[in-house]
Image (tube, rainbow, N blue to C red; front, side):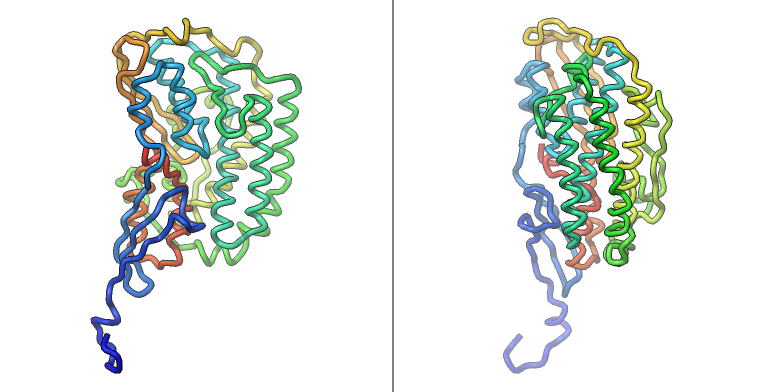
Length: 377
């Protein structure tokens, strides 16, 4: 605008290009978004998942079946355990390998501990982004308690490499069940504090209610799964629809909400975390004795018969799928993952940001529970 002149409609509605992230509390990893804005309203959003952890699927075709386990964990840094599970399921299906009953229970317990840890990490990210520092620090501390359990069981805190074709790497050590119970009671005892400080806080309601709302029909059309879909009222969970491990051996519920907004998605995460704790207690009580591993041939020379398979499981973010092909050799011929962050972080995020306020970009991003490496893999 010329100095001294009066503003015109064209000047006041000028579109600007704004780069949001990755140096922002509301972004995940190296994710960034290019925004076209008019005033403080977003006209168009283009997601950029960055350059991180690229080419995993192709790299897996050059490594033996067992060498891929340390690699597959890196696809989801926050919850590598579901990646281990889906790859083990694919190898087992191609090889016709059975898993002992006790190992199936251990797998379920292990995966639900991972879900609790992942949800605590998500709660930390979301509450921290909104400025709720106290519950954010609680969540990170309680996640560390879960990582202590993983470290005792597997030797690693982040990448565990515990699930193998045919079972698990080792049985629970002596007294480990009691330590699981103690840790989960410690976390569960603080749920009233989380509720009073964050979930029932009017500021959380004001910032999240009605934000980034999506209908059930639109969510299904765009490929939403996990909390994004269950927050619209759809009771859909792979652990119920297509049970694996020991999920069909105990009773548990699928938490849902109805509004389909950021507020509902975070509440579903909270309810799922509590349901996972209850499920672990039931699995521990029902877990049988026996072997935990069905031995495979020499893992470095293991050749799997030709064939193809598609397997899926319910990660902490939604449906995780794996398509894998064997040509009869000692390596996969083709590997392709179906990760929940792909539709959530690209098509759904871009659609929900249209018309949103700049202040709600991070709010929307974290509520969709996106992990960047799942997209750029």
